[in-house]
Length: 310
Image (cartoon, rainbow, N blue to C red; front, top):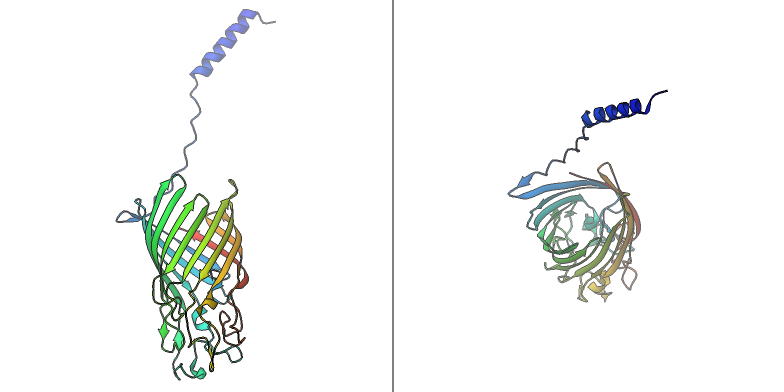
C-alpha cells in the first residue's frame, strides 16, 4: 500500500510536468479570401447566370426559352457604383406586327402591309444594360439608392411600323431596410420598350429577401405595378377604321414568390411569377401582350436559375 506522503509527491510531480508541457498550438485561422480587383478605387465584381427563362417584371423576354446572362459591377467605398449586364432576348421581334387572326412576327413583318415596308426586317437578339448611381447607407440596415438605368438593344430596326426602337432610359429611387426594399422607376426617354407615345411610364415594386437563419436558404417575395399613361397610340391600336384602345392597356401588375439556396458558391433559385397582362384589346383581335405565336408573355410561369458570383 502506498503511503499518503508518496501519493502526494507523485501528484505534485505530475502537476509540475503538466505545467511545463507546451500548450497545443491553436489551429491556424482560415485564410481570408483575396480582395476583389479594383479600378481607380472601385472594386470589380460580377456574376454569370443560366436559367430556364428570362423574366423581367413578370414578362418572359425569351418566350419561355433558356437564358444566359452576365454582369460586371464597379462599386466604390463612397457608395457610387456602375454596372453593365448582358442577356439573350427574343421578345421584341416575337411581337405581333399583324393581328391575332393573322399573326406575323415583328422580326419579319413584310407581309403585313402599311405601315410596314416590303422586303425589310428587324433583328434584336441581345439586351445590354448600363446602370449606375449612388447608394447611401444612412443608418443601420437602411439605405437610399438613386440612379439611372439604360436598356439598350443592339440590332437592326429597318421595319418598325407601329413600333419604336425599344431602347429605354429610366431614373430610379430606392429605399431598403435589411431584407426589404421599395423602388420607384420612371421612364425619362421618349418611348418605353418600343411603345409609341409612352414616355413617363413608371414602375413601383416591393421586394423581400428573408434569410432563414444560417441555413443558406432565402425566401423571396415581390409585387410590382407597371403604369402606362392613358395616351393615344392610334397606329398600333387600329383595326381597320376602328381604334380599339390606348396605351393604358399596357399597364399591369406582377408578382413573384421563390426560394434560393447557396451551395458551394452557386446560388440556386426556384421561383413562380404571375403578371395580369392583357392578351388582346377590346375587339379581341388587336394584340396587347400576346406575341406572334399566340402566347401571352405575362401570365403564370415557373423558372429555375443557377448563378455564380466572382
